[in-house]
Image 1 (tube, one colour):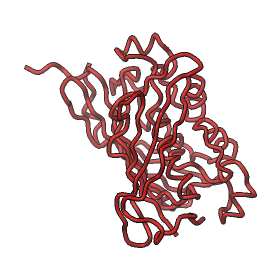
Image 2 (cartoon, helix red, strand yellow):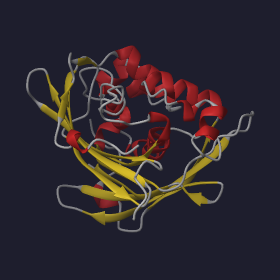
Image 3 (tube, chains in turn brown, blue):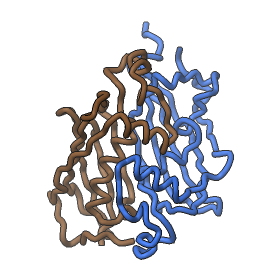
Image 4 (cartoon, chains in turn purple, cyan):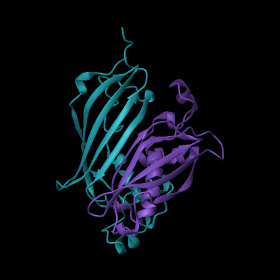
Amino acid sequence: MTATVGYDDVEVGTELPERLFPLRRVDLVRYAGASGDFNPIHWSERAAADAGLPGVLAHGMLTMATATRLVTDWAGDPGAVLEVGVKFSSPVVVPDGDEGASVSVRGVVEKKLDDNRVVVNLTTRCSGEKVLMAARATVQLS
Amino acid sequence: MSLNQDFVGRSFVSPVPFQVGREHIRQFARAIGDDNPLYHDVEAAKAAGYSDLVAPPTFLISAIPGALGLPTDDPALGLDYALVVHGEQRFTLRRPVVAGDELITTSTLTGIRAVGRNEVLVTTYRYDTSGGEEVALGACTLVSRGTAPPRG
């Protein structure tokens, strides 16, 4: 249960390089099943239109999980994530098709705290829009 | 229809402990497209010092009973779940959740406020093991679109 990144090896401004994560309709269905969130706006075109939405949306929690993954992979240990919080600023519309949507995530170390903890600020975009705001994770480094 | 303010301040405790299972962790990890061995391989998790498979940090969302801890099927609350979008989410973990944990979730609806024509519901969560250990805290805002009464 130890991060593979050392506190002394990072500084404010250290970057977590951008990665792209595809999200397709089947991923939303899989996430609905695994999470238990069966809100139809995440799988039904009709329900999304009835709710006045631009299309079927990814679960916010799936976007959050995707952003968090950049941090867990970087830290080398998912147990190193002490806190994670996001605001959902723009919906991730997932078109029906093989392409789906593509979510890009990159991060930067924003603060160094005591006890070898750091705060990572995450930038998460889809189709050019920032889909998360104030997305930050506190990580226990070694 | 606007939401029932009488629900503010109420807490909802999971009726039975949520049993964190290996297959559920694996299924959740597959659903977020994450092949981290600590989510899938018990031996890898043990080699890393864990007692069993580790749950991804946001797995905690699935331990909340009902729809994000709120009694959305209670007509008295007046929440149409099809009009709901997620506003904010936060988790604070005292320790990683692992397979074998039994979690009892307490969700408290701390506020409902109108923002324009939307209503924003704020909920906080606490996750304790059935042994009484506080494992994690959470906070969530949901936006009920277009349900606030027009002003004036």
